[in-house]
Length: 405
Image 1: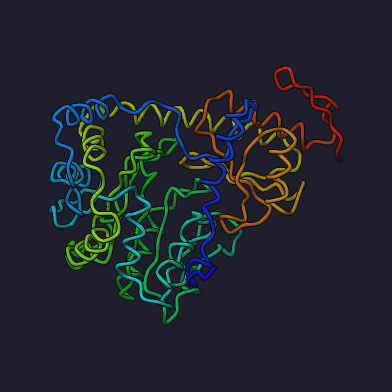
Image 2 (image 1 turned 120 degrees about the vertical axis):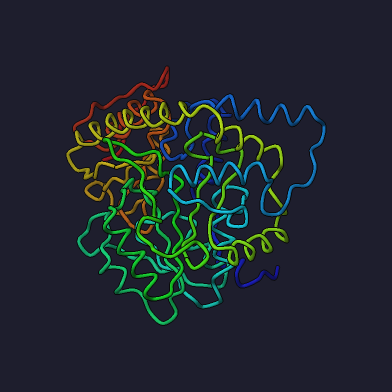
């Protein structure tokens, strides 16, 4: 069968494949624990449900504008003013089928074949594949100092004549690292001096810990929105636990937003009007669910980090936010795929191999499930990896026996 060159180079999303695997195992009745997901277990805000139901009851479920319904744009404008201190117009906003689609159409709007987009490593698994879908090249930047916090120097070393854009995800998936205001200020200044686009992937920006507060990228630029090449991406999936609703948005200058809308109009048209109404409900409704989720995640993070620190060979940096920690398991196994496969085969714990995020020997572990998932999952992992563990382990009525070194 003949496939396009792009199709031959694009791999399946490893995180979505894990979700599918978890569903299959759970469907078979296996007591699997999913520490690889990025999906909060908290309930969707009631305001989102009521908003959807109210529109559904009208019976008027029709096509939506390619760039989003006016009510959602208005909610995004208010959100942008509240959290970013920036007043924008409806023409500066596009609503998409999740933050993922917003990033994808942004790349398609600004990148030519063979041009480069730079992002710090470890990075979200989809960035390199999105660049490939544009015929462009993703360039990962691993901090020289071995931390998860890049310096401007690290990025400058990878910028070349083909560089068109930089994408920053802070707090970062998979590490949970929240980059400093000084670093973001330097990136903004550098992009403006070099005439580069800057995509801010802010999908986790309110899910941060230890008293940290979200800050606005716009505080570091003196350019107005129409002169700026900053594109800010966000959505309802993470902070409102609305992953299945698939609503995100982007804010940028009118020219780039119009181009993104034209592309999206031919790809998918506008997102479902019902799901956009749900997002309106979430954004305009009571916001206590966001803080409740944030507090739950912070507590789960603390428990997971304490348990990982009890491993003799694991090294872990305490996340500043998100749902994830990115732990170094190289003392046990150099291949993250081999280690991840062993954990699901031996103790039914799903993890994501670090190589998928650009760093071998690590595992991304999620703490967005229940506290029971966190504690039992890490306990199973420790039993599988620690040579001093007891020879037997019970998972429910199932007895496991260590038959490996």
